[in-house]
Image 1: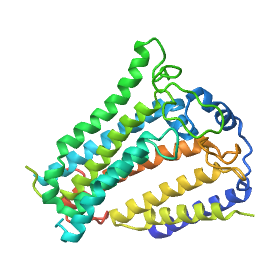
Image 2 (image 1 turned 135 degrees about the vertical axis):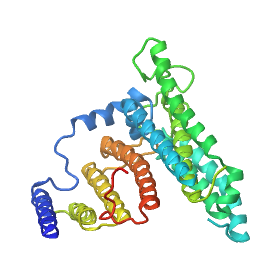
Image 3 (image 1 turned 180 degrees about the vertical axis):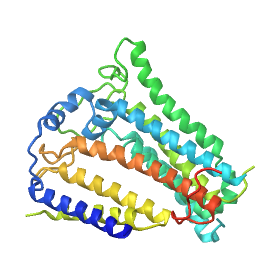
Image 4 (image 1 turned 180 degrees about the horizontal axis):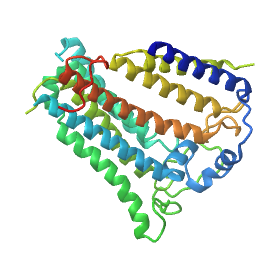
Length: 88
Length: 153
Length: 113
């Protein structure tokens, strides 16, 4: 019974993905490119970095990266606490 | 985890400093070539994993300790925040690129070039801080996995 | 017509959801979650591609037709956070194994004791 419901859910999910994939745009032809074209054209003079991806990660989205480092710090400290409590 | 044979230990102690140097190169050239703080930090953490796998969990206590790794993870993420707060002290918004146009890391290249290490403003300092945080954070995770089930003093 | 890249994404997502829905072992559930994460990363990377584009790095680039940088930056963020959360999930799985002597989610029922 439970397995049948799970199978139905999985089938529904896969069919949704397949129907979406038919209407999605083809590979290598993006429809909306305003933001990315602006960043490619002006990113070098605005951030000074040759690596545009590095410019996006550390300059345009620097606050996001700060949160990411915080998540990494919290996860590693929590992992250390978990394993230490286990070893005692 | 027990230690491996003498061949593996010798080769890993030869390769370990080269791995650290390659990771540092990756971190320092993050604004010019593919790479950056996260990738270089992951490479340094793979060097830590190499030492732990080759020497075993008992002997790797002489190389690393969880307190030091956790401390440097905190120092890296705090350094990132401090670099951002300095911008507020100078009168800009948080994490503003205040080094752009100055003598230190201030060069702004134009178009396709061969790469200048003194460009990109506050990105290289941030990348160094992120590299410290990521290498020690991932190293802490790998080290604690190796200490699993063994009593740490 | 579906591109082969989207077929790969659909396959990976299906495998991951199968692992989450049908497997009772906690380690296999975590593997399923990781596979879903990598499928999403692959989907974002395929969205970023432009025909004939090179990586968005100006150092000695062949030409100035470049792929989109923002999805690459998002995936770079996602990979590191995924690594940290996977390690945290594995640590919790080890704790559950120590407490219950099993990884079967059917027998992990007592939330408090």
